[in-house]
Image (cartoon, rainbow, N blue to C red; front, side, top):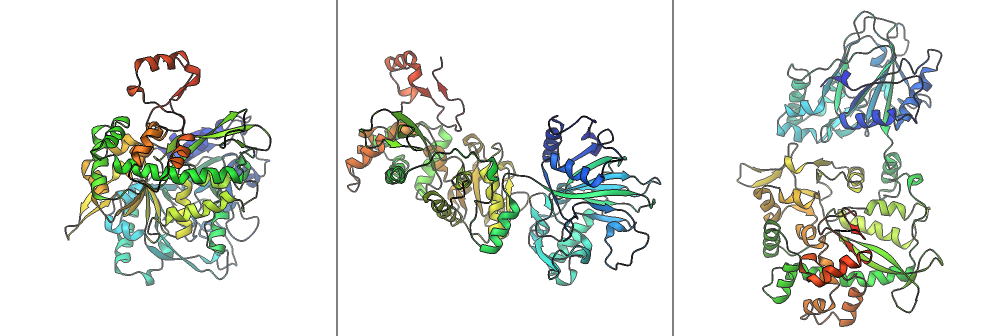
Length: 610
C-alpha cells in the first residue's frame, strides 16, 4: 500500500459541483485514506481554519469538537515553547508519538482524522507514520482478539475531559471488525486481569514490533491527509522544527441517520428509537397515506397469508398430490431441495421476517369491497400483493419506520407497529451476546443501520462478516462451533443471495441445519420458498388453497377467497401450455415477467418482446 497513490489535486476552480469531492469521498470510504494537495485551491490570505472546515464539509463530513469549547473544531498541532498549563496536550510538545488512534478515550471515537499542513518540518523531523489495524490483527491469536472485544478501563487525559466528572470509559479495544481504539499509555494497567494483560502484551508486541509495515506519507505544504481513525494507527517521529504547524480536524461521515441523536435517545430514554436514524430532509414527503380501513383490510388478510405460507412450507415434503404440486411449481435445484427436506425433518418452520410488496391498481368502480381511496380523492385503488420478500430479513423495515414518521407524526398506527416489530426481531436473539451480520455481495441499507442500532441499544458488538470467512472449529471437549477470523458466532442475520448460500461448504450448511443452539434469521426455508415468486402461483389458485387446507376446518372458504382476491393470477412459464404462451406474446402489455428468485425489480419485463 502506498499512501501517496491516493493523491488528488484541488485546482483553484474546484468547488462542490466539480465532481472531484465525490471521487475523494468514494476513495476515502473504500480505502480508508486519501491525500489532497490544496496548494492551487488555498490562498495564504484565507482563514485556514474556515477553509479546512469547509473542505471537510464538502467531503460529506461533520467536524467534531476537541473539547468543551465551542470553537474547538480545529486543533493546532505545534510545539509550545512556554506553557503555564500543567495539562498540556501531547500535540503541543515536540515529543515522538507512539502508534495510537485518536480519541480512544471516547465512547464513540471519530471515524476520521485529518491533518492539514501549513508548515512542514524543515529539518526532517515530525514524520507521520501509519500502520494498518487489519495487519495488526492478522498477526494476533484468536484468543487475544476475543479478549480485546471485552471492555477495558481507558483513562481520559485531563486536557480532553469534556465533562469534568468523567475520568475514564469502559469500552472494547477491538470495537468492531478491523477497527481498533488504542493508546497504550491510557489503558488502566492496574485493572487488567491476567487474560487482558496477556492480550495487551501481545497487541503491543505487534504494534511496536518489526513485522508490521510502517507507511510514511509525505506531508507537503498545503497538503491534507485523511485516515480512517479505526482502520489505521498513526504516530510521528520527534519534531525538529519549532515552526512546524499542522491543523487537525476529527470528523464523522454524514450518513443517512443522525448517530448523535440516536445515542442520546437511547441513553436518555433507554428505548427503541429508529426515528432519529435518518435525515428527514432526505425523505420524500409525498408518501401514500393509508386509511385505517385499508390497514384493517390488509391485517385481516395477512393472517390468512401467514397460515397459507406455513402450510405450503410444511407440506413441501409431503408425499401427497398437494406436496407434488408445491414441488413441481417451485422447482428448486437439488441442493436447495435437500436443504428444505432436512430442515423439515429436524425443526419446525419459523418464518422470521417477510414483507409482501403491494401494488395499487386503479379502478373506476367502487362496487368491490377491496377498493379504497388513497391520498384523499385521487382515485379508487385495489391492493395486490405483487411479490413477497423473504430473502433479506431487515429489508426496508427501518427505512419505512422513518418514512412513516418523517412528517413528525409518531403516534400513527404504523409507527406503533414498527416499535413492536423491532422488539419482535431483537427478541429472537440474546442481546447480551455479539451479533454478526452475514453478507457479501449485497450492499444493503437497513442492515447497516441495524448494525448501529444494535450496538447503541444493547451495548454489545455487531460486526459484518463474509460467508467466505466462516469455519467450523472443534473445541477441546469435542464440541463444534461456528467462527470467523474474529471469533465465535452464536447468532447472526443473513443478508445473502440464494446462490451465495448454496455456495457455502456442506459442513457449514449442515451446521446451520442441525445445530439447535445457533440463532439466526431468516429460516432458509423462508429464503428459498417464501421469497420465490412462483409461490404466488399457488397463492392465487383458490382450488389449490382449498386442497392445502382440506384438513384445517378452522380456515373457511371465505377466508381463502379473501387471500386469492389480493394475489394477481400468476403463471409459471415452464408449466404454461403453448397456446397461453402465444397469448402472452400477443397481449404483452397486459403481462409482466419476473425471475423467480430475484428482487428489487431486477430483470422484470413489462410489454417487452422476448
